[in-house]
Structure formats: C-alpha cells, structure tokens
Image (cartoon, rainbow, N blue to C red; front, side):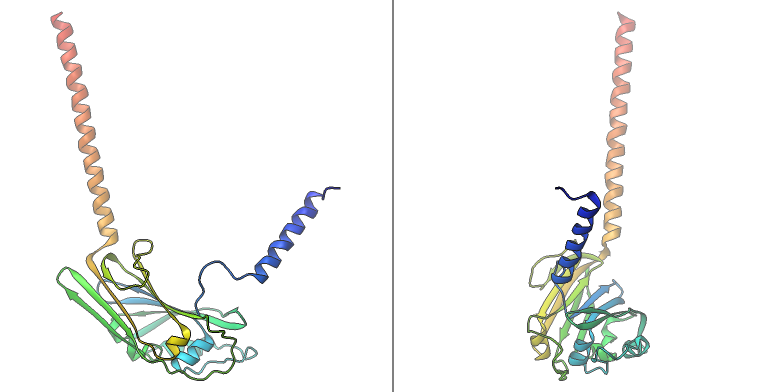
Length: 251
C-alpha cells in the first residue's frame, strides 16, 4: 500500500535531517582562515573565520576553550582592536566538530601595519607599486604554538589565506596556479605545519586598474562598436532604398 503524500513528505524531511546531521557539509572546511580584500591604495578588509582553539594555539590569545564557558564577543573584539585596525563585526559563535568558531571582520588603512595587532604579529606584509603593477607579499612566520589540550583535532585540519584582488592578476605563487572567479587567490597549509612554524609565503602582483573599470570600459567599447555597426547598417539600407527609388523613377 502506497504512502500518503503527507507521510512520504515527512519521511523525506526526516531522512534529509538525519543526513545533514551525520555528513559533513560539501566543500573544504578550515580551522583558521583569513580572507583579505586588498585595495589598490594598500587598505584592506580582513575577515577571519577561526575556532577558538586555533586562536589560542596559533596566537596565544586568551579565549575560553571550555564549551560550557560563555563567549564574550566584546573581549574577542578587543583582541583585534588596535590603533591601526577597526573591528566592524564579531559574529555569534557556531559549532563544528565539537569546537566553537567565530568570525571577526576588520578594516585596516595600511595592510603593512597589520602586524601591530597581536593576531597578525606572526606575519610580515609588503605592499609596493612597481610601475604599472602592485606587488603584495605576506610572509607567515612562527606561531605561538600554545598547548590547548585535547580539542578534537585529528591532524587533517587546514589553515587558509585567501586574497580578493581588485584588478587583473599578472603573477602569483598560489599552489593551485588558479585565479578563482577572476580575482581570488588561495593558499593552504596543514594546521599542524602552521603550529610548527613552517613558513608560508604569499605573493601576488596585479595591475593598477580596477577590474570594474576595465569591465565598464570593455562594455562601453562594445556598445560603441555596436552603435557604429547599426549606423552603418541603417545607412546601407537607406542608400539602397534611394538607389531603388531612383531606378524606378528612371524606368
């Protein structure tokens, strides 16, 4: 006997719920991730997605690792606040694999001064104009490698740095050798290698003209070419019409 539509729908929803609770989400997941939206003047917006355990282990920051201890988002904001950074958001925490994660967003007017903020003190940044190109280098050195006990790490955890570039990339050393979605570059490192202080060098060179400006310019050029073509077609049709009218008048 077939199930009624409502029963079938309920069973389907239950199956999906069980699948979602047992399976990991699609895509790669990172224990610590920096996303850097660099601008052509050297300013940047930085988004950090991290577990509290990674914050403590990598940077030595005083954050609660006991799941029963409430997270003070203002305290996390204070860890990233400095004379050179403006923290714009600290998210509500979420859980994954039994660990708590947060997202921190901040703005910096000169990316080269990020090491003045403790969570970025492990890196050295270079941002320099070279003719018609900009060179960006980020060199990650040793982590604090603070002991955090058993937080559930199994050795497969990853660290990532991702750059969002405002113009055409002319060189980069990203291991994938790909520029994702036109302007995104990614570097990865195992968390255990980052904890051990294995160096990670991030380098990219890009043009001084924004992708948006280039896109608009190409669009306007295409529109101009289309207008010229349309004008030529109209002129040809009108000319042919005049020639036919003249021929009819002579006949």
